Length: 125
Image (cartoon, rainbow, N blue to C red; front, side):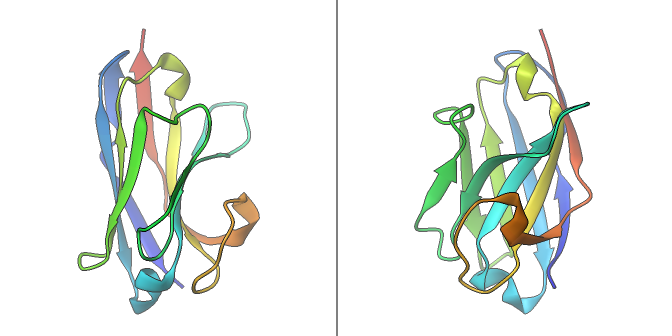
């Protein structure tokens, strides 16, 4: 099991930027695909971005492609989500997640087995 703690959320104006970080514990981190999801009030949790264990491949939802960048540092056990050109519709609680198995593939919510507590991102218009 991977323990995850997010940080970096906050309030920002539309067009601004925020950087979310996820600190992971456990030696399996370096073998796990990592992802970011978000959940707005009254909506289901949705996929935002993911990065494979090596960092060689990234995936993005259409709604954030070109604005958000996911990266990881396996030496520091961290995953980062750089969010630029933020929009009010990006407002949500953002969650860091780790795949259930080593070297797993896919970005469906069901394949992620470890979750952080979430960090609030609010974008004002």
